[in-house]
Length: 170
Image (cartoon, rainbow, N blue to C red; front, side, top):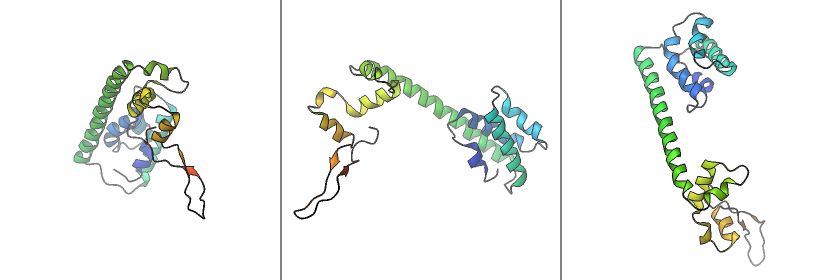
């Protein structure tokens, strides 16, 4: 409805943002701030949600945006629903991935490392494969792109640097 909304809404994967998206078209016609912000607080009252709703209200009053038509309201509602469906699919895929990773031999061992949770452990195993495939630590380091390379000719030696040519998820 107005260009500044993108900056105020934030991450579209965030539950609060999806709620704001669902409510925003209907709220644009409200004249006072209290009536505008009240529906944003139903279900989950939080100071950050209230702050974002108030900021949306202020910007909506000061901007030159497109009027909220029924078509625009429908499009925003549809976008919010599609985001909900996508988020649910991500949760299902993550659950299935963790079930598959649970059967792998190195998975419980990775979980014992501080800072490595179930999702990261599954991702590491998917990228690395079976650790027994590697004979040296340097092979894993190269796979991750953390090996040191140096460029040199017969008369010139460059500075050594990390190659960063490995798998990005590692």
